[in-house]
Length: 86
Image 1 (tube, rainbow, N blue to C red):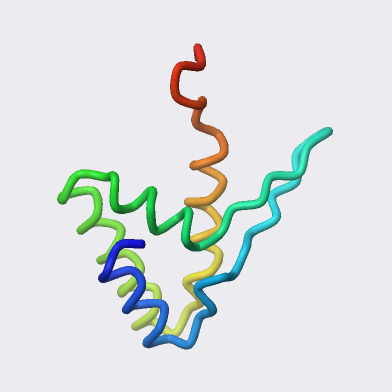
Image 2 (image 1 turned 135 degrees about the vertical axis):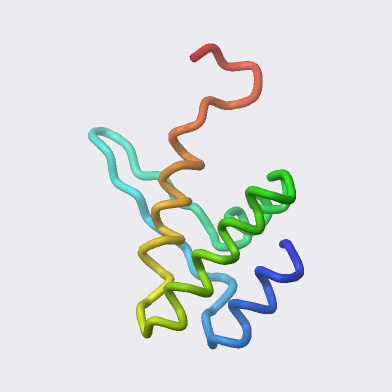
């Protein structure tokens, strides 16, 4: 898991073992925060920085970052697997 992301979660008391259960017709996808962190680590530096800034903005405004992280989890499961045609 990306270091800044792990630290960010820890500072906010968010369980790093949390999972998002994403339901779609006929399927249930389970994405852990560890998976989200690994996905973030694979992004280029600019994309990581934009996501980090968005998380900080949400946090500083008193909002919950969990809906945004759930949104990222949905993005992860919507991407085709490696070698899978779109």
